[in-house]
Length: 450
Image (tube, rainbow, N blue to C red; front, side, top):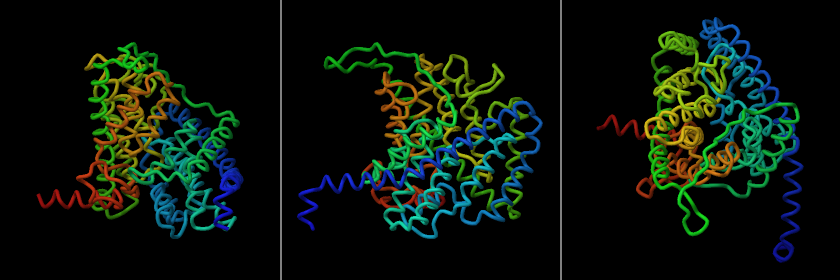
């Protein structure tokens, strides 16, 4: 049998690919359809809130409702993306099917009443939940369940942003720092592409972003050209983007930990978070930092799309969005972190461009992908996302910003179940195989000793 496999390995490769194409088809079909429904509902909810700004005053009550929905029927579904990652690393009780409808409903509620959250977390949880559902029905082996869960992540991510290649790489890269599981590469790619096709077939249109800047720098080695000064600015910006990703992750975790420690009546936590959002909104005198922040019917409002134009953000827009989102997610509201990270990065890039004289659209685009890279520790996926969203003309700058941000975000991130496969620097190899949560706990303990 061993000789047979060696002699005819391509037969086994073809059978493997055929098997996974068949397995991911129902996952992609259902995930793509549910993500399309989710995006449609989200759009309706946000438009309704724009037309009725007073809904913000009901945000604390919405938070209490979300709390009791999870308390009554959520059980371990509260674990969200981290539960899916844990199941891939160390299979246990599985990802419950109820996670999909619960997170879909509660994310729409969060956005309807003005909570500052994203949508990627919801799409990934829908993907993981449905993948586990099909895995149970098909009675797959433990290894195949892990792979199918990864395809669920890829399908959800690829469909929600319209970036199928990024979705596949993200599902492989997000599980462990410095390590990619290549045997799931093709299944994740097939799942992400199919889910994106299905989502688009339902008439869902994704926001179009554009970088008009074209590099006319010096040509090196006949083919390679770049502006040396602009490259230096991109490196400096990458440092800032990585620190912003670190700051967002740490603040979100800190708010969650301290709110649970200080507020004994748990349903008061989202109520307090909702009140805090209302207070900050009226202190700032603007609703620009509520909900997704991709677009805003007010032409004078700050949004992701305006950040690509000169004067499209204030110097502190990135900081306010960071604070609003950390409070929203840290106190129990539902949604993702990624779209707010896009906002934070694009606004910070706008500020850096204004201060350094760099092209605003390029720097906003770099921030868009690089803060995400730093906060999720997925620099390769984010570089590819830059190409899928903005075109390949400035791929060198995408890579420089994302890779730099990845290093300067340190061993932190928004997903505390993420593991360290290979440390970012050899001096920190003692963190290998630890989760980011374990690393963070040790870091806090060491600070207290100091």
